[in-house]
Image (cartoon, rainbow, N blue to C red; front, side, top):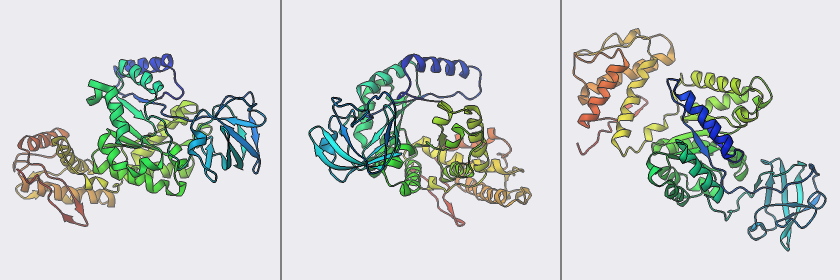
Length: 423
């Protein structure tokens, strides 16, 4: 459950947290809470009524509210705006719907031409693509919100506009003794963060593909490639990856998603992401419960098919990661209708799984895994019957205790052993 502190106050957020804690005493799988810090946001000022903007119109962006914003200028709450922006740069407002080109600078103001017009409302989000914003990653508002979250036992903190490792380290200092318990999810939303994705993922507890701002700050045509880079980076370093924003956007008003949205969610799962996250669909949408149910249904169907396999590139650095690798190796046996037994003769009854192509692939993998488990001494012959998850857990636990754990790296029928060489 994500609580967006860009729009929530402490009273409302506290009420939601209380509801979740109550729910968690009744359900088999507890729901964790992620506090999403607002971060260094730049917004337009407050206006009395929407301001119409037409392509070709010349307007002024000012950092001072001394001019009537409704008739001649648009106030922006970033004091260094005139210093960091130059003629020819682009200023984007309201998630890319309204765009300006900077013509020239004046005292405390930018004279701009409207490229893409529309109706400008109050406090609309401003992006400066390609420009480094000189604002701290953890603002004073964020500090107060995060400390409030820690007092209410949150599980995750999502940090907005993470640009480098220093931003993660600043948040860890604020978390203090809870830095090991409360995991940091880095929201990478600009070009600098994209360049430093591997360093950021290593330092954080996970990464979020925040496609809203990311699609504005970078070339939108490159967004799918960036998403895949993020998922791969998370797999390489053994961290969580969340794909968020515009998953089922049409369901804010419609009862069913578009075919393109369903395919987009499925593709994120095929890539190997760990979570898909809704935002507007469940915060202000007309069908929040149907959105969650639809997302769950897409995920269940998509997980029946093999993912891209980025996890084969995992750089395992801990016992937990080695155990996880082997657990994943054995987990594909769940897809077989008939669980075979490990015995002196290898895998017994291996041809009885199913005739379906996808399940036959899993059966072939199970054959390889059983033979491999025997060769590594992970289980005793004539003893382990792979017919239940309990036996699987016993096998993995035994492997962990003897520190003889292998990684499955099967590509095109080849099997590469990745046993820990020091043992």
